[in-house]
Amino acid sequence: MSIERIGVVGAGQMGSGIAHVCALAGYDVLMTDINDDALKAALVGIGKNMDRQVSKGLITEDEKSEGLRRIGTTLTLTDLGPTDLVIEAATERETIKQAIFEDLLPHLTPDTILTSNTSSISITRLASRTDRPEKFMGFHFMNPVPIMQLVELIRGIATDAPTFDACKGVVDRLGKTSATAEDFPAFIVNRILMPMINEAVYALYEGVGNVESIDTSLKLGANHPMGPLELADFIGLDTCLAIMNVLHDGLADTKYRPCPLLTKYVEAGWLGRKTKRGFYDYRGETPVPTR
Image 1 (cartoon, rainbow, N blue to C red):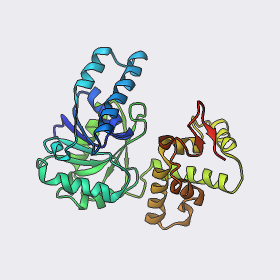
Image 2 (cartoon, rainbow, N blue to C red; image 1 turned 180 degrees about the vertical axis):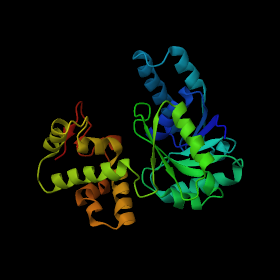
Image 3 (tube, helix red, strand yellow; image 1 turned 120 degrees about the horizontal axis):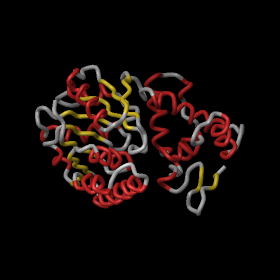
């Protein structure tokens, strides 16, 4: 399977990051979103991130210009029909992802590969709602995409070998490293990472330590680059809660029960950096712990 044209669904942090790295790797990219402002903001963000790469000597000015030229945008989802590979990077809600694939199906070529950047949802279940489960798999990039080197590749029960090989070939061309995960809730990274974050929230909830002491302890005591609560804010507390719910429901084990404090923050709309408030308040010049 030859892949040269990639469609990206979603112009948020993940979708724009995926478009960024694919364009620099020489792919023609078409990115879609339901919001024109989101598409415009994504292009601005990609340009700034590429400027940062130029300043660090990671890419040249010509490579930046050529990369930006390869990225097109559209508000019409079905325009992605002729692409060779579709990477869905919409919000982490299964019903939304299913609706996207159902709308796309009548417009795809017979050979188009469908993938989802989901961090937790069953690939087999998503694939079963399409007309090509053998050409469907999980393609989970890490955030921020231009910096993080890992991509989890997740086969559904029906994913065939040519589809897997084609997606692995894309990862190789991007200069990233792939890890193969089985189709179990949250795969590998989030199966391990999210319970750690959830336990940090429990430590805060139970008064074991405050936000600053918990994050400092993990940064200096375990050599983590970010504390778990700071990282949760970066990921998005709604995303963390959604993944914990998938783990709790999918594995039926009480050790994955989301902390009530995490649920409370999400209910309050305190989702982290993207809403300027989470375990830290980002509305001032420097982040301030909220507890």
